[in-house]
Image 1 (cartoon, helix red, strand yellow):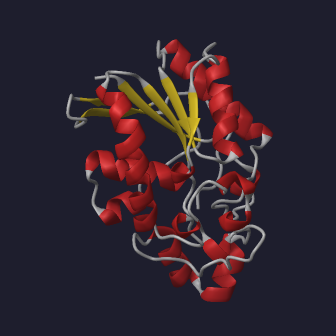
Image 2: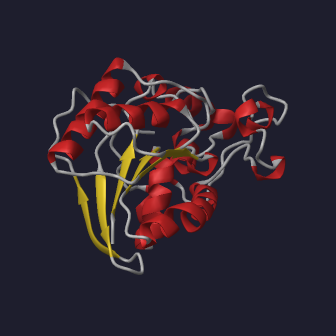
Length: 240
């Protein structure tokens, strides 16, 4: 089968500030731009070529994908952006720092929201200007499908739909696919690919811009998973 490569976006400004980002459309830092370029250069050196690139609807994955493909001299690659690959929606926590939330709710509760598989944060109001129901980019998505706060379990279930409907059929054609992901949409993909236990996937490490390479059989079972951790990075960012 074709190769599947999943790459978390480069460092965003709110990654740097330790803020819950979720569906907020926060751009890359200069460091994040260089991280994405490093990933692209590493994939080019390794000889990768992709038939399809997939991103979320958020600029930090879209820009990271552009930068990766630019370094591979492959910006002609078709790109699909899908809302179901967005980061986990952090609800009312969005925009707040981890330190602020620990002070307000306590470390144990914040840890549960960050790393509990089924723990859903306080919901964002649907009338909030930041809510997806208020944003033009999601105007074609049924309002009932747009979240106002999610657990990792919720994120897995929405990613499962785009996996079954879009990603898996392309891979079954023997095509090579690269996905520019977020920390939790990448955890969701890992869960679907490897049937990883809930507690394990909630703690699965997802560094910025380190390609995760899967080789799959004809039934999309994992034959090999390799993380390209040997690529040079200009720095590391905090991971909520």
